[in-house]
Length: 607
Image (tube, rainbow, N blue to C red; front, side, top):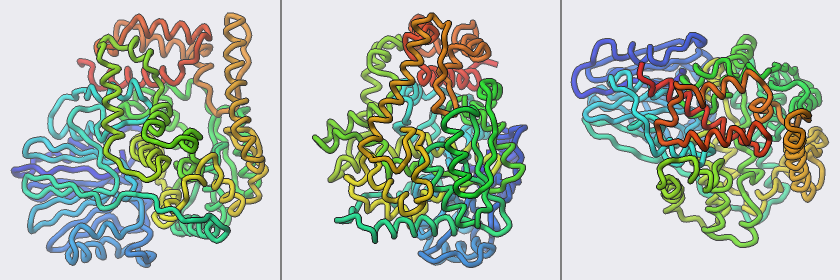
């Protein structure tokens, strides 16, 4: 996996430690350029694709710096000479220490090693766009983009973090801590500096987002948003690089396709993948055609989502669904003609209010806000949790995990609180980790999290974020030519009245349920495929023999491990029968459970 890795031991460097970490992260499908550095107690390195528009390492008599990622502005000014950037930042470190990172606008992790004090500093961007795990164990400190590399260099066997596993198998859509499934290993929080000085670890959070809403959203404000978004795209274009955008039927990807088409003079390729006849694929093609950019469709069949699942879960260490292993096919193909992929991430949260609920307008308060979050995060209701776990305290433990994660915050506006918690534990902990698939094969940049643009998003009043109110205004100014193309969530044109959006979304959910009912009422003899999405995991778990055999081997063979960790075999069998008959659609729950079983087989099974 691409990224920074290394260690600081309390004694001299242990020969071969960096090689041990590299070997633990090695994947036959992925190639990287690797830079390493060792000195006394310190060893570190960087695996990358070689697409950065700057050198990635610099050294002088007092310090070494390694940069992982892209940098666009420093102290508010556009970076003029990328090749001199590491040297510039080293000089800044000598003047002001590691706190210079707060003045960088970019998507990065970076490391500074101070030779004089033998101290090590790690820092990431405001949002934590690139995962970095770390572990302080006694007198040693290790870090890497994969937990397995840390375990390898510490010579430790993997041990399951049972609280994260419970979080994973109850809430599902969010990880409500900075822990991962390996006990003792944490993920670096956004906007954080970690310093190892002697044997002490110091953490400092240099930024946190808070809303400061304007009194009125007028044309001038929308113009400012659009201008900052276009500038974010321009900053991310480097001469000589080949650009792609992953294009779906949603809004985020189409607005990113628009700004990248403008920034590259339409020399960007849009990639869409999935079921050819799905509404999502049809919409994506319409967007690309309207923008006048090249469109490439990569068809995916049910086997593409399971054939690399073992190695996929091994790479992502259970923190993303096994079905994302289709990335081995898609991103390898994309990498043949692309250097940098541009992704629209989470704009629907901060412009569309996709995690907000109208109850927050009608009766705002802590109780309602936390219920909205719980309902959005939770794949497993309370009755399911009580039945699925042999441990009768599992439900109470789940509630405590949620309570701890949502306590201690002070927000004037409860919609702001919901968006903040969504960012912290859904977007940062789940959505950003998913980008690691893409980053194995092509570099990725994320204009939706440009600092200057995001600062403007934080000025949006909460009432404007509900139900896509400001998103529609934003799109109408940015890309009026795309307003009459349907939105995948509603299948209505974006230009349709907002009052119709919720009703249309409800109708689509009803159509999906009707397909399930036809299957159930005919005992599986008649099937009507629901084609709004580019995938259909629910159908495949019922009808595709490859998927059924795959799932049943994981769930019910003698090798199955999840039952050793307190899961009820009887209840899993009951859910499986309900799913096959069409009594219920448990697709999301089974994606979670099957991924967990694959994780256990990869890391907890006795070899």
